[in-house]
Image (cartoon, rainbow, N blue to C red; front, side, top):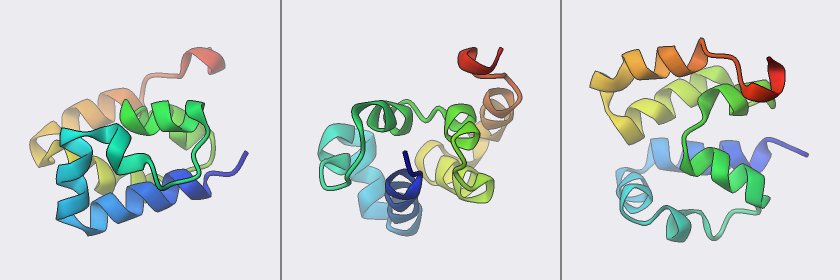
Length: 90
C-alpha cells in the first residue's frame, strides 16, 4: 500500500482553499477522484494524522494539511493526535 494517494489528496487540499472547503462540506465528494483504498479514505476523512504518519505520510505535509483543514487554532489537537499511538501500534 502506497501513501501517494493520501499525500496527493492532502497536498491538493492544503494548496487549494476551494478543495479544502469542499472537503469540509462533503469529504466523500472531495476524495472521489483519488485512488484511495476504503481504509485510506477513512484515514483522510477522519484526519487520523498518527495513522497516516505510521504508514509513511510526510509529517510536514500532515501538519500543513491539518492547519488548512482544521485551522491554526487546532494545532494543540494535532499535537495530541500525533503523540497518541495508533491502536495498531500499541
